[in-house]
Length: 180
Image (cartoon, rainbow, N blue to C red):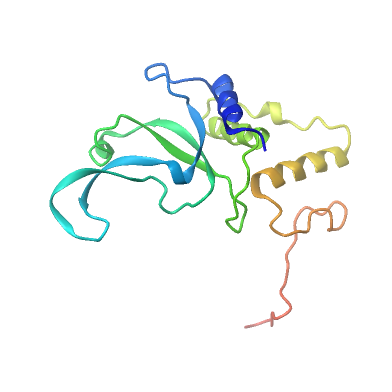
């Protein structure tokens, strides 16, 4: 696995810093380490407070032991009170897990693809650089499989075990009964 500091530096080099705050536009962080200040009117025990207070809480209480790709965004006015008047916040755009929730190590190629795809969807960049330029279908297939493994892991254990040229299929469990 490439060092997180190296990946974060690459994100800065490719996608830059916010001009006002000088914070990176994108970063990869460990979910368990992220805290945020929130205006809250209850305690963890569920006790209702008379007046809301600012508390520091886990940002990703629903994620454990995974890496998260975050994007720096402007907090909308209607949400600033909830986030203790914070104007900029890092928000998740990708969690490095496979289809069953198992952690995956972050890697540069899929991380860059995710950010480029986000920018393309926003109309800020083109995905033309991802046009297939492999000379053979086998080389293209190998590149696609590599990206799939880096993004999603091999949750099926079937990579390379399907029919040549097959990209997807339907698996019917042995207990399936038609009409039920």
